[in-house]
Amino acid sequence: MNLPRARIPAAALAVAVVLLALGAPPAVAADPWAAGPVSTVGKLIWDAGDGRLGLCSGAVVDAPNGSVIATAAHCVRTGASPEPPAEVWFVPAYDHGRDSYRADGWPVTAFHTPAGWDVSQETSAILPHDYAFLTVGEKDGRTVQEVHGANRLVFEPVGEGDDVAVLGYPAAAPYDGESLHYCAGRTDVLFEGEAQAPNLGGLLLKDCDLTAGSSGGPWLTHYDEATESGTVVAVMSVGSGEGDVVGRPFPEEARELFTAAGGS
Image (cartoon, rainbow, N blue to C red; front, side, top):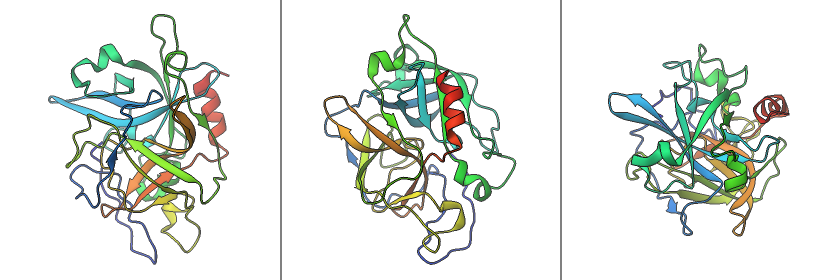
């Protein structure tokens, strides 16, 4: 999504708050996911008007109804567009499917964003709530989880030092949003004194230039190549535009939102 930057004074070891805006200069290259598309990870697409498509990333997460996608709240509601798009599709294992996303995708039937994501406020004030769950409809009587599998979802606290892969579909140059890319590193929780207040509790990953379109993509630990799934510990939230990105974990209060999305 093309979103505004939140202007916040710099601090020691701070990560700038930039909602992965189109046009942000690339810093270092993210790599293509070598195995190709991942069954449990996909792309969110909607008609943004004037011949443009809105783009974000997301992941299927294990839920009682088999129909829940984890993504970022800023993919759903912004100050400029406080209501979700009228028609959104989630395309698992997306790979160069721009012309067939409706046929390939699963329609989003409900949007679940936290009460703290109040887009009438400044981005800096609501950034700790930049997570969302989407409920998608069935296709041919089957759920997205039945067809594509699902990732495990965990809530805070997130452990430090675990291997993590951050996956998404970056669409701003030098990428085109048509294939899955990733960055990898270790989970690094931002504590008091390490970052600006809006980013506290987030996960920091350096040397990663995943750009607009990768918002909402999963931060995965314990990835299993056989099941093409892992554990979602956070979703892509913001970037500095200079190679630092921050993922937003799911706080304990997100359980109620997840329950509503998962139909239990």
